[in-house]
Image (tube, rainbow, N blue to C red; front, side, top):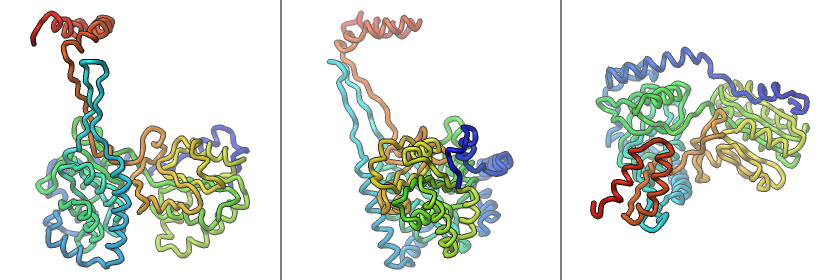
Amino acid sequence: MIDWQTLDVAQRENLLERPLMADNEKLQGSVEKILGVVKDSGDDALRVLTARFDGVELENFKVSDGEIKQATASLDLEMTTAIDKAYEMIKTFHQAQLQDDIEVETTPGVSCTLRIRPLQSVGLYVPGGSTPLISTALMLGVPAQLAECPSSIIVSPPGRDGQMAPEIIYAASKCGIDSLYKVGGAQAIAALAFGTESVPKVDKIFGPGNRYVTEAKRQVSILQGQVGIDMPAGPSEVLVIADETANARFVAADLLSQAEHGPDSQVILVSDDASLIQNVESAIQEQLKALSRWKIARESLKHARYILAKDVEQALEISNLYAPEHLIVNVRDAEETLDKIIHAGSIFLGPWTPESAGDYASGTNHVLPTYGYTRFTDALSLKDFQKRSTVQILSKAGLESLSDTIITIAQGEGLDAHANSVAIRLQEETP
């Protein structure tokens, strides 16, 4: 437990620093080589890299119709029912985000339109292999479906049996995605960015992944005109604000639910109650014993922070400094704190709102900015699968009404041709 009041400004900044991604320079070089070999050798490179990193040799990467039918048939009713329910909840929330074109007559004779259209081709990266992220397939597939993107494909690492996880295949089918490819890692991002004989090139890449995937997305996104990505992202993180009314077991469970993501995940508890912090630390050690991924969680907890604040208001200030991916506010009258929350990717209010609800089935999207990027970007939503362009239509009278304004400003900027493009029109009776 660290008392926030005892720290100076520099110490406070150091306390809220994220874990550094190890071997960053080496990682960049490794990913750059993978991108280059896939760009040059296509499917042949994918076969070599899949054998090296996933331990399976594949001749064909595309999931066949037969494999889709077999995967769907292999799932029990409990799993398909859960996926169906989560799909409906996510669809309901994202469907409300649909927006018509916006048309405005800014002045008589001048019509302006905001035109909204779907992205033409999107690639959805879904972590798979030993721990298939079923929910990610839904979080990416549902908005792509609602946006009516003409081409949506999923890439996901194969398991040791050389197959894509059947749960991911079923989730993809719910979202109307029938082009699935058994390839993962940085090589999958390369395939989506450049295209191979099997995997089509896309306009934008979505989805979380390990540090190789994250670095690959970063590198392809800075290639001029090549491909877009959804957002910058790093290891998962949660900050919990709790007061004396919070249940320590609830808080511990919420912290561990993020810690089990990976050894570089970070969990932070900020409370104005020292006894609660101590009880949470004890509850974490007790609950840790029962987790199947306890070794991963234990490594992650090395980055954990337990901070004693003066009061809830100061706890909110600390949270805004950190700008967490997930923020859980487990305090008395939690909803009243909302206006004071400035930076957070997804917010969970009250004792009955675990972060896991947002991960799976409340309806909000769990693809979120991390590493403090919530200061300037937001959660994945329907608009990320759309693009917007503006349209203007002017009558001659409309142009005349704006001519003085346009010509004066253009001449003020020294751009005579801009001014002339208006003036020359006003000298003519017909186009």
